[in-house]
Amino acid sequence: MSVKNAWTELLKHRKDDFIGGEIEHTETPEGMYRGPIVSLSVEGNKLVVTTKWTAHVETNRIGLPVGDWHKEERKGATRFSYDLMDDITSPPQDMGEGRIYFQYPFSRIMLSPANGSKLDPAKVRGL
Image: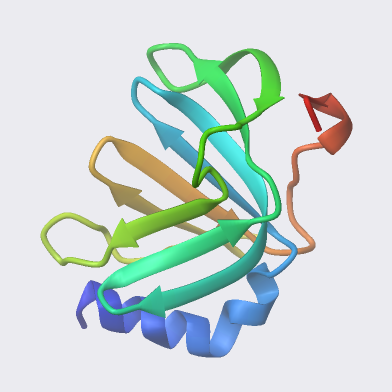
């Protein structure tokens, strides 16, 4: 099954589980981004995740957060878009507890369901 078909099938059955959940996107060397999911869709050959807000924190060389979370202000910060191509994007993988994980070049992404782990907005400067 292609990566696109895997995501299309997953969202057909579990999309509502992730609305109100959270995306965690770790990008080397940029840092980590987290935010509450408001929509999730396959648009053409892309997986698009939209968040209510996005927080950012610097990470160390192994991807662990260092420092404080702050609201990401750059334009488009609440929209994550991933090409669903078999040679660059891994298929969605079940991580247990309803979480889904996939990899994209230089990035690791986890989607948590609405009843899963979330970043406390009170810990995000600028919110």
